[in-house]
Length: 517
Image (cartoon, rainbow, N blue to C red; front, side, top):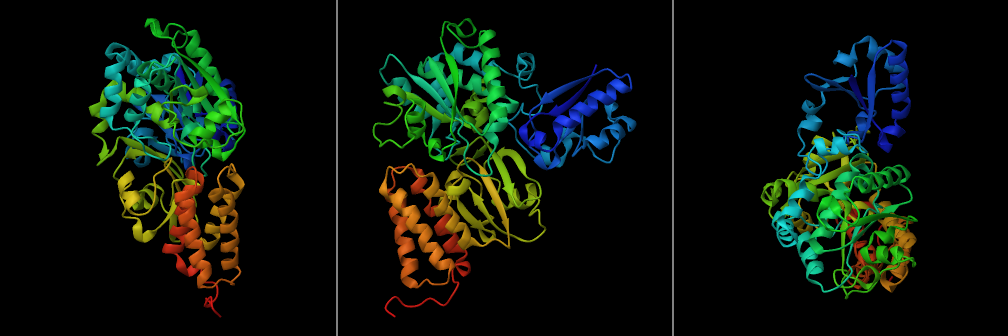
């Protein structure tokens, strides 16, 4: 039976994928054709959605941006055997946008039925867990360390160091937490995994639990992700019924189970200690450190807390070996990064590649430049708390150290593109406004500083600023950077100061007056 693949990723659904799938089924029935419609995740090319694929003897053939009205013409063109059509992109894997990627974390996303254990196993699923069990906990920890994997949520902390700290902590009860509270604007990688390849996250969390001897895991997701949450909850049920979760994981004698928890959407709960407060049923506010979560985390027990992308990469690392993973990347930035390209960009979506490609290659080459057709002026990297990079810095290699040297951060891998109509002083004002709205209120630099910062930028926007205003703004950013309890307040200086440094003309609304005048 011919298989037709239609994504059920929420981005594709928003573009009409459900209606297209329905019309394909109707048209096949009308013509007396037997087909199987497989609902997959997205391959990440959101500018092509709905991207419909058909399985042929020579490989999958793709058809982009299909509307319900075009379905009949697809059948007329013989798309079930890969026939030519104006929307055809040929073999999907050979299209330049896909062929240029190195997919490790997202190797299965868009290829498999996300809730089929058979599909998952056929594409290499559970091999990483099986090898971890054969190696034992100690050697599994060593594999994670040797891979060079660093946190994919923002800080870039070595994953192996964190896991070893938990493994060596003496406690009867330990936990693994997946931070899937994907709150950064322009990011969607966590959601794509939960919708398109949920078993990879489940397998990664089991590996983490096995390595540190934790018996319980939690996935903390967002209420704004109903499709992802529903898919992942079902995947947990399927994995548990198949023996991959529970008292005896895959007959290994190791007990580990998972639970999905859904937050109320507070941005600050993406910070690990605020997340744990929320998991414990408390208000999501930041904890002071020390103690570190690795020693006293959830319910006071040693806790591994990683971003979803870190955990979803574990199956590849254990299945293929640490060296295979570490061979990708550059310097201390090993492996690949799923980069999420959004904003005013022609080819928006998720593009996974090894560290080392330049920012300009991502924005202009992969992203295709601005959607408006106007010159690109800036790209914000790392979410709403990330720095704005001008085009003069687009030759910066995409890796942790190079970005830090340029005054920026990789963060969760989000890149938001702006053309030459953007007002960078207004973007600085928004950064403070965002922090004021999302602050947990526990520390003074963030709680008060974000409000005062917004007021200062509004003074600048009104053309009433003098040199003292700019000096105060700079001092305020320094105070927030070094005095805030967590990264929400501590990272606000990145978008504000990068805007002021690289785009000073946007802040000079009127001739500055001397403070003494």
